[in-house]
Figure (cartoon, rainbow, N blue to C red):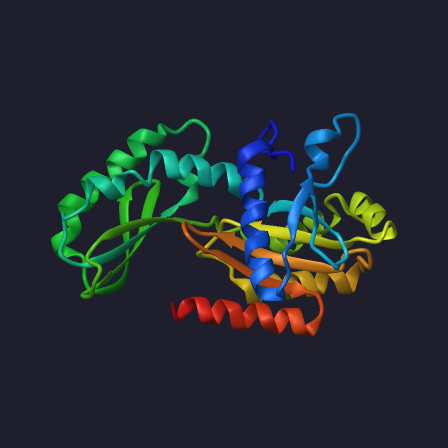
Length: 271
């Protein structure tokens, strides 16, 4: 998979994510799939899928992994947010004896703004205003062009979290358009592998933990496939790669696999 921000997301990051997914897939399906080749890394003169995996006595898997944006430009903005805004959480550690979530409009990262200064503004405002912020949900005008949403609760963990807030135009229509584009991603190349006898898997990775979930994305996928069928895709998976866990949902595929994937996730929550 080539990075939408430029360059190639191959090598160790790409292979690590696919291997982590296969670990969960094997646990869900009772298989022993291992990657046997990386076509996208080995073929430079034509589009190619990310990986082929094999398991004894099973059909090969043809896998393509792509990142799904909830709204256009989300991936790049999330990287910038993590670099310039989220570090303020560390500076506020221990500064307030409540559980606080500050939602910051992603538009603070618009071109022309001083992103580091925006983080300083948020930090300084919170240190001044924290004692007067009421419990529950509230909105606060920090500057003429910056308004924050704050949720303050009297429970553990007593930390301050800073999260990105989507722009107002991040609507269902934008998510639907994003899903439709991702379903087309390497579709022709996956179809070639299907004709050669492989099961085709499209992995949709979401880095958005706040605006969407498996139900919202699942509905968008279902609607897109109703509008434009993709019969060469055997399975479509929605994946979140967390620190120590792969949260994998089978959105399209055999009912037995979809049920096994759900049971696996519920089991994981109980560990």
